[in-house]
Amino acid sequence: MKGRASLVGAGPGDPELLTLKAARLIAEADVVLYDKLVGAEVLALARPGARLVDVGKRCGRHSMQQEAINRLILTHARAGRHVVRLKGGDPFVFGRGGEELESLREAGVPVEVVPGITTALAVGAALQVPLTHRGVSRSLTMLTAHNHADALPEHDWAALARGGTLAVYMGVRTLPLLTARLLAAGMAAATPAAAVQNATLPHEQRLFGTLGDIAAQVTAGGGDGPTLVLIGEVVGMARRDALGDTALHEAA
Ligand SMILES: C[S@@+](CC[C@H](N)C(=O)[O-])C[C@H]1O[C@@H](n2cnc3c(N)ncnc32)[C@H](O)[C@@H]1O
Image 1 (tube, rainbow, N blue to C red):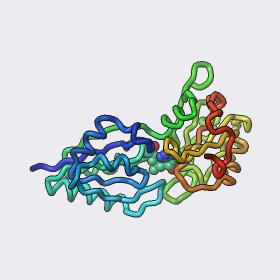
Image 2: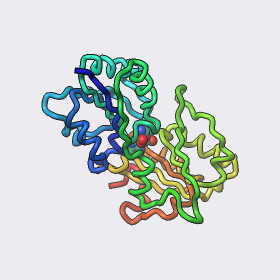
Image 3: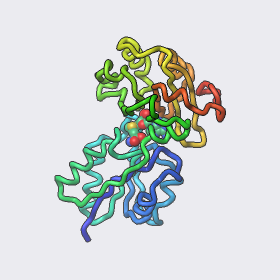
């Protein structure tokens, strides 16, 4: 039997945010290689006897190198197995899905890609913040605040500061620097901002602030769960009554 691979987005955490297609592929797979952020309820969809392999990637911390993961997918697929490579959010948004895709294509292994709900979309929905909104924001930029050297990557700060909604991934460590760059590029300190940790999970925690103070709030809040930061005028539309302006460590 010829093996194959599916690069599947698992969404941000809430199992109900999985697509029907993702659920079906997980249930059919012989092998599921999953990241740290994929929860037990999602993995429970795998059939009895399927091999579940934690490849341990989370937020730039890699317990298995990307090349080793690529090789593992190939090894299983070449052995005739259906491999589901299950990734948090969407495989093609800061998910290194492209590298896995290239490796599979080069090896001639049939591969399909199944999108997942990326965190920015889930956070917008959770906070009831429309990421674009007529008269308020005409664009959504998803950016990483973390590069290979564990530092803030270069961006066109002037363009980012001009408006639109910014969704910052992997930004906890470099947030003070990132917000300083935006302020220096002319973005108003009063621009609304929010940080959501463990979005869509039962222990989700939210912080609301401004461009001027969100970094300090996140630092004070502590916690090492995955966190997405939204910056832009639309964040002023957030529904706050669920948890209120609560520091990360105080939130329910
Ligand atoms: C390596 S990136 C993976 C992004 C993922 N492919 C996606 O589409 O959402 C990891 C970053 O995604 C964000 N993230 C992923 N899951 C999250 C969650 N449940 N809550 C908040 N942020 C999350 C955080 O910014 C985290 O540092």
